[in-house]
Length: 198
Image 1 (cartoon, rainbow, N blue to C red):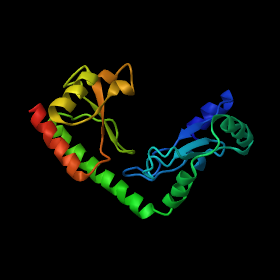
Image 2 (cartoon, rainbow, N blue to C red):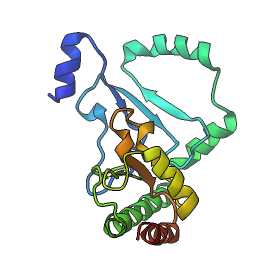
Image 3 (cartoon, rainbow, N blue to C red):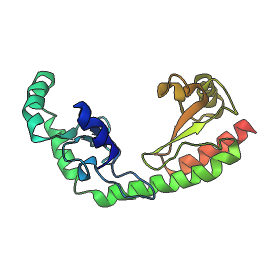
Image 4 (tube, rainbow, N blue to C red):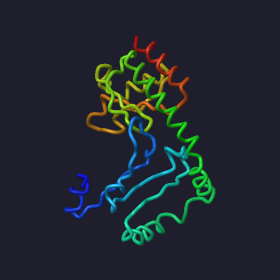
């Protein structure tokens, strides 16, 4: 039995699995929490793998006993997703070839950045096994990630997110870089960073 079940059940708690990046992994297969915990609550969305960010369309998979309570809660928060979003979401299920090609592009971008960013001075990353971000340790370059990102944007023309947005205690020494763009954009960003930090 997975450790999350061992921890959650005795305390009368639910295991909630955020699977919004499901399908965007590198070097491993994705598995839903439902494969090992039948009463997990799974949250998913069309935003990431299905490239429908902003459509505000997603789903929950819940045990039968939670269906009615969640229906009552939902009807007090919204009526239904837009019809056009529902039609687009249904169509997205048939676009796996194109969507998997996106994941292959992310993988190539990731490989490029993991090879080239250390040459610019970024040489310590959190494991980048899924999604389309690198979380970089920049303590050798700064102790103020917000100011560093501001300078990087205005001086090098490369945008990143300060680690403070994700970790208010240790985030001053980290930044998050997205590799969801084109390979050409990634190559240009790396060259700009190399010049900027030379």
